[in-house]
Structures are given as C-alpha cells and as structure tokens.
Image: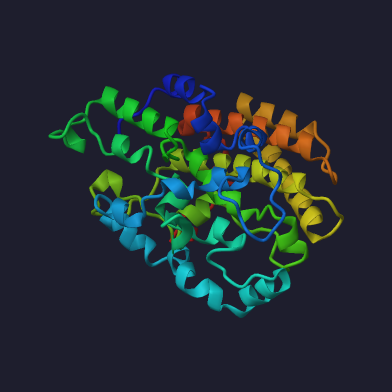
Length: 359
C-alpha cells in the first residue's frame, strides 16, 4: 500500500467545509441551527436532525448492492455478521420489544430511534425505509457524493494496480471531503463505531431500559474480529490481518473516539439516573485509559486531548461545554488518524489486545 503524506493529508482534511462537519461530527450545533430546527424530543427521528446527519444521510444512500459490485468478498463477510442479521432479528427479540413497549414504539424500522444505529435507511418514494441492518454506508458514510470518486483510478481504462500514487492520494482526500469515512484515516472509522456503541439517548436508556452503550467495546478487538473485512490489498482473495503498527494507531484512535462520544453522551444528561451516571463514568474511565497510554507514548496530540478533557466538568445540564470539548477532541482525533506513525507507538504493545481475540 502506497502511503499518503501525513502533513498533506491533514492540511486538506482540516478545511472547515460543511461536508466535513457532517462527516466528522464537528459543528453539530451549527448543522442544527442551519436547518432551523428545534431539538427532536419525539420517538420519530427527523433525518435533518444533527445527530442523524452525522451518522448517515438517508437521502444519499445507494445501498450495499452497489458496493458489492467491487467488494463482493467484503459483502459476503458482512452477511455473516450480527450487523447484517439485525435487519431480520432485532424486532423479534423479547428485550427489544420490551423497550419498544415502554417507549410507545410500534414500528422498529420507521418511527423510532432504533433506526439511527440498527438500520440503514434510504429515501424511497418520498419516505424513509430500512433497507438493511448496519451496512457499508453505516460505517463509511452515505455514498452518493463520493462513490464516483472512490471508483476512479485515473480514467475509464485505468485499473487500481495502474493508479499513480499522486492520483491515489487525491482520490482518498477528495472522497473524504465528499463524506466518505475512508479507513485510510482510522479515526473516521472509530467514530462510526463509538457513535452508536455509546447510545447517546437519555430517554432510550432511562425510560426504555436500553443499555447505556457497549461498555466492553474496544475498537481493535471488535473491528478485527467478526466484522473484519480487509480484502482490498489482496484483490478480494484474503481477509488480511492488520500490521502491528496499524493496530497501535487503531487502538489509540479507538480510545480517543471512546472519550469523544462518551463525552457527547454525557452532555445530553439532564437527570441523575442510569444514563447520566453511566455516561459520566465511561467518560472518566476513557480519560484515565488515555492518560495511561500517554505515559507510554508521550504524543503531543494526546496531551492536548487530555488537557481539554480535564478542563470540563462531567455534570448534569452541562451540554454546551461538554459538546465544545468533544468537538475539539474530534478535530484532534481526525488529526491523530491522519498523522500518526504506528511504528513510533511500540510502547503500548502490552495494551493492544492479543491476536487470539481477533479471530
């Protein structure tokens, strides 16, 4: 794999475009204000809501079948995962039905907050419709604006093997600017995971009884387990393991994302109950873990993140300050993903999950 020059990559990523706000989570409040909306307090999810936009824009979804044309091996692996199966099974689970009953939800796939994390939504005949479970675009972003760039290796007759390094770099940069969460920057993918595995919905937890996030979620061990689909480098022939250097960067990126989205969840807490207490505890735990890692690697970006997190109070009704801190951490996380050199992070190898957890 030809490396992208880190500084060039970060310079272009740092441009504060509206697309990048939607893609990375920066400026949640600005998106909401630009849409002229009040916060959504009903069970129905408005696709223009800021938190929905950051996850996936259903008006720009093209569906996993479009991805399968070039990524057949990846899609076949996905079809064997819980991410795929949730489309057929979630609404049948007794515990899910109990949550729905408490919240007055009658349709899992159209009128509830379930659709934000458990389904891929598409606009069909002027209505939103669930077309899959957690699928390609759930993690990589709605593809309408970037798929053509992503598929272009330098002309209609140029193959991926013939693509020049310069074109490849520009293709990645442009696709990311257009909304793709490309794994060339692992923080963009880590965000996709923690955005849902922190369950930032107070009513869903306190009233519905949903858990307050996957507290045992860790980016490396989960992404390199059942859902691993690294086929690109072998032209679809093998589900390759990541290098130790890449895993180090992924591990730290996951820790940063955990802190960012735990803090975002905490910002929504208005009462001292399960949601607020659990979210604050998770934020504090994430910060302590990042501090332990920083003692090993001494990275300037991690030092900035820790300083920001330590400067904000984990308390009820502190949304403005917590979201502002989370936005800053987001920017630094994207920068870390773009500039980190995993070969300089060997000091954390004892922290990274062992290979037997990746299978």
